Image (tube, rainbow, N blue to C red; front, top):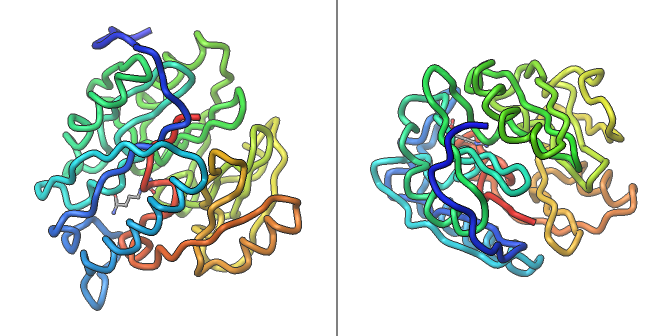
Length: 266
Ligand code: CIR
């Protein structure tokens, strides 16, 4: 297991870490140009509604101050990988995002034991999905093989089964895959090959947009879905889960989904 940089204290869970939208949000990294430009104001309004949904769903909220030097800092999920009682503070796959995790680590260290990620490893939290005792790690444009090994180094000693997964035509694995409970995932075919999802029940969501499969499991068991993905809400409800919707359309224009706006410890 990697060198430990801080010691774990008594965790107070369920807790969600969030980070506000900076004024510089218009300069966020995007896979293709956005027109009209991103609106920090609208993103901030949607972020506030998202945080309220997490709180209503049973999470204690810890807010990390936003940082103008990091236009993408609201996508806090990418800065850490939490597995059980251990966490990596990541080394981001995109150079402009390296360093975002420094402000996140102190709060996380109240609940989990923190480990660093060292070069040449790169990893974004959006590539790591924990489902029960399984950990799927996406190998993507942001997360490399050494990054996946860093996840295995904290997860396997705790008894988790770690599976590297080749990410399809999406930014992160979780851009098209997320967990509904400890054994069920919702998946879009662009996220990865279905055969990689060993040991879990898979609900497939169709349509053009893989982000339709990016949902957040609230602490009370309800599933938070993006309001612009009505198909997702129907599919999940048909499968017996209760849902709640929030509008994150401006966040989506910056290539973000629901999971990427928080780090959740259950
Ligand atoms: C980026 O490209 O890094 C951000 N604009 C979006 C990150 C979204 N994060 C995530 O899905 N976990």
